[in-house]
Length: 289
Picture 1 (cartoon, rainbow, N blue to C red):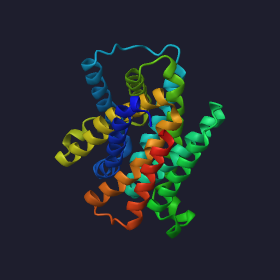
Picture 2: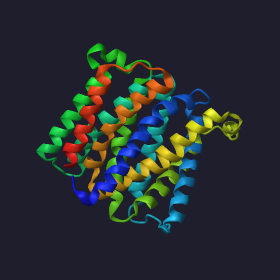
Picture 3: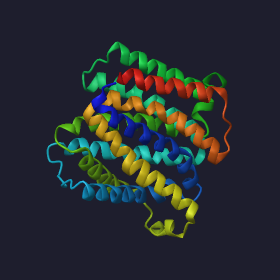
Picture 4: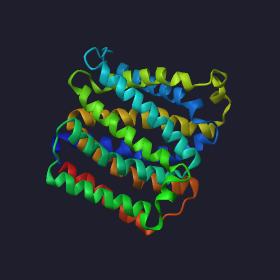
């Protein structure tokens, strides 16, 4: 692990913890409204956080002329991801979603990188990926499940979300030659908001403003903190370190997701949660060593 990137690693770990917290947060938000009622608003609040960051750090707004196709592609996939994220947590288990998506996404990112970026991972990266998958298997207790159980109860949405996020990671790296990561985030959220408008029921325009403070705490967490700031940190890492290393940090998410789901949603913590979380953190260290 290079010392010059230590601050980036710390920010990424904190961001992944916020992603983990966002899984039970999304389930709580899903008790108030359907995915199509809140997706657009999530992107709007993420945009507001981007504008604030750009103003503080005096980052100019640059139009992605050369990388527009990558930005639009990432925007389309992030809409798909968000729909599956909300729908999956609404009808399925948030803790399980917080395991399936971050453990499967890095694997798919490695595969997509080899196919589309012609990038062959090093042995240590494959070892780290394998350890991360073992951690995911322990966290999910896959030996107690069958294929039908994984697909049932909304978990198919988590699988689709993992594939969509792997694609977002690849297109983020593709756009790194032109855009500052903050600019990339701004345009992705802005275009995603426009792409999500067709599924947004206009009669629900002001619906979220009728909800209580519990909704708003969780909505700000999943929109401005996890999506606005956390995802931007992920984009920065992807552009600076590459899609494979950035996706490896997602192995921290399951540990955070299951612990927070246990605290806020009374889900049971078992020994495999602790051991699996340790494996996930070791995986991040090995891949970035």
